[in-house]
Image 1 (cartoon, rainbow, N blue to C red):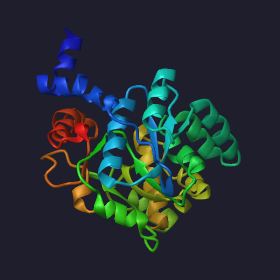
Image 2 (image 1 turned 180 degrees about the vertical axis):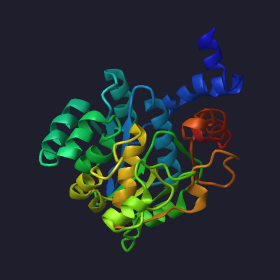
Image 3 (image 1 turned 90 degrees about the horizontal axis):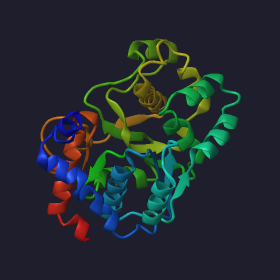
Length: 291
């Protein structure tokens, strides 16, 4: 009975798009030409989320018409079948297995004790250290597996591809969700912490992911707080010291309302069900799976 209630918690339509339509993405053609290293996409996935990731990536490549290089980081739960399916759909992608990443990154962090401890104990820490370690471009597109694209993300692409643009730029969150206090950062680090930084979508410059900075930030009071906020906090801190601004409002996380004319929507946990009943349904109406 509990499983039945969970399955249909958000209605029959949501269950249909999640449990039936969602799998049709696996019938689409592979994205063969992900070779452009002007920017490299880095994503972190698991056995529970990799199918959503395929939707995220295929909608981005479809509507952006870009061929950015792709690196997929396995949290350690992907099966051989999962990895084979991802490799089939993104044949030029690098898929980083967890044991290899652990060996490489642990060695790189040997002289950074706070970073090393955080990497060993926090499940989202690879989004910081592994992304930086394996990044083969100066610019990275940070992308979570709960985002769908519905049109060309013009302003995002403009910032990624403008050689004179030297800021990190991400989608705005509904509110600031950090483990540290902005006043503490101002007093101890000497810079202003940006409001509402969300680490799900945006441009990150490789130079901003500075291990000396991260080691310093992990020593701030209460830095090691809520497990999923620490990674976002570190990106916000690095970006604030490096230089950052939010993407325009149409990219921001919002819990109310629909897609409207936005190029994409970030379906965070509270509205994950809308990724299926709203997002995938809209893409079907646009003829996405026929393309």
